[in-house]
Length: 261
Image (cartoon, rainbow, N blue to C red; front, side, top):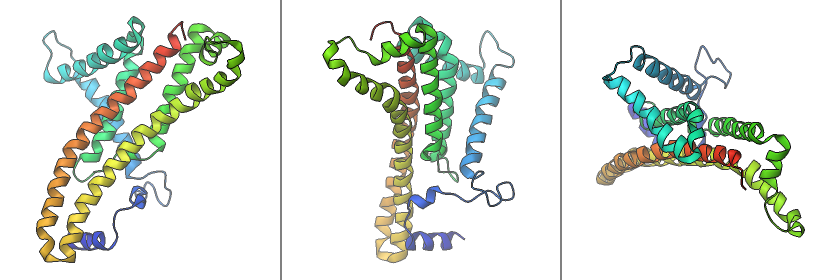
């Protein structure tokens, strides 16, 4: 089976089609709605829920390792993202931001887990849904804080001379209501997609070269060593992208709550 897969890797290089996985039979049948990617999303949700429930089932004054890890994750997001970006009001958003950070981090980590090695974030649908949720949230927060008309006036009309407003208002609308969710989704998707493709190219490239010519064995070993190095780099990107997505969400909430433009 391994020999057959390596031969196929030599004949068919990795492509975008590798991201379109078959349905999981018998649950998925012929439908594309239940695949390995969908299963990984549910696994990520289950792992996060179980971890936090178990960690805080019997909280102690001197925390256990699991309790310390859970409290550290929440404290990191609350203190370094929510309060740092939004201010004292950020405490109210800490649960959502912590959930967002942990969920994205867990989904991203699947991309470097052996035998899984693909992240749901490498499919644009999942980053897009997360971006839409954050988008709806910061608009709702802004409208609730300022009132509907005042919020949109605050978001669309900058303090500028009246004669230049016809030019600035469309720019502000494009920037605040179109670019923000688009950039949130695409940044996460593009990084996970590119990372997965790089790991595929260097891993399967090693098999392709050694199958093509035995003299290329040293080059194949070098390709696999580069895969290990890229995996370490990908781990940093995984953590950074979860952090950046959460920080940008917090900054958008801060902008929605701000009284000045």
